Length: 226
Length: 314
Image (cartoon, rainbow over all chains, first blue to last red; front, side):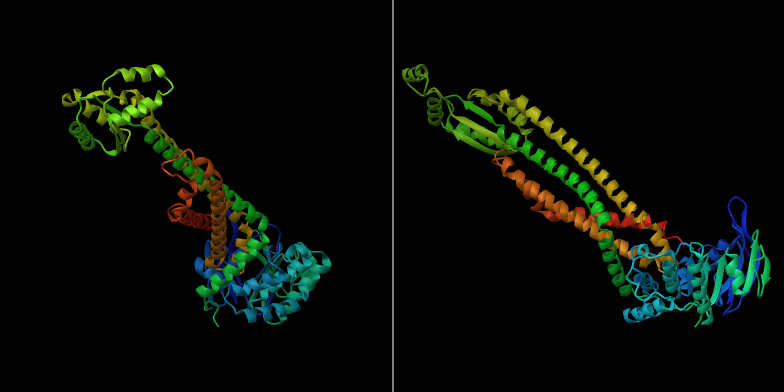
């Protein structure tokens, strides 16, 4: 599903965010990527969603070589990946329903299908009856659930979650992880980038540890080892 | 299905949904919309007020020019044929707007009327056997510069015996001043109109840039969920269209109301050439507001496109 061959990413000023990273993630895996700040986790996410291009190496997602992906092809890639962030990244002037629907509208889906899909997604993340509210009228946990519903709108094969629990209390964080596990059970590959030791240790799934731009550990059923 | 091969979205769907987003965004940011439209309206009103002032200056200069004329006082010996010859000659050398012939009898009647309260003058006239006044030819030139040509033409030797006096000498200074004022007023008003137009363009440019800057995070989010650049740009283009159209409607309303209110005061000043400020703006609105609207709209769209460009980078 995801293959990184000898990936390096450098920035001007001699900063090497990632160096010679090899990684293969199979379809349906739930992988946690851990590491201290500045170890290259966010750079890895940016490369996967084609926000940045690698300096060297090759990235393949779902059989598509996105190493030199053209700008106009990026929307096509992103419509097939779900992405969630620590700061939710919801459109502030749109209701929860409109935020979820937006992901389908940009793909040209029909209105009827969009309305049905939004209802199903809201139900999946436990937001029934709250979809008329704007982001500023919701708690952090609710906003993250809207973000997950939006990320799942395209029925993506891959869900990338960059510190999704970073702004949430323990209860809400556990709820978000429960939803991610449920999504993974449906067959979606989940990539969880996190600092949260408890969550990683509780998952008992594959853990990849980054340090200084290198993969230092890759454990099938791992723990947070830093 | 391969990851790469997913369908593209139709043009109609993009613009249909863009229209919905634009209207939603305008309705939900009504405060910002109001401020932007007000700024653009003020800029447009400033430019149009200056254009109106320029038209007013031109009309004033034309009115002053119409007040100037040259009167040729003929001797009593001048025959109607000789006077006609002078008239024909003047028409040849200058562009004459119109001329009035005053016969010796009319000149005498006017003189008597003017001095009716002065018994000494009336008594003196009675002493004379014949009419001491000759005919008068009053000439209005189309251009102020033509009076000098008329003056030169009348200096010819052949007319010296029949022309007693010309009034133009008394007014030549006024004419020179009018000429000077006309050229300078037109230059200054043109310069000011250009300056205000430039300021208006910068204000509009900035207002749109600020409006887009405030939405830069939304643009980034839309990109993250797979929106194409066209899908992101389209609502902005529609919003800009609404901003510009509303600002022009407000400008036309304000200018219309102001010019209607001013016209009754301007009427008595410009009697004769029938100048109306309202007529200037709305008599040929396509060449005034229509042209401005097209230019400003294209400019605003270009501004929006440039302002969005850096936010649309992947």
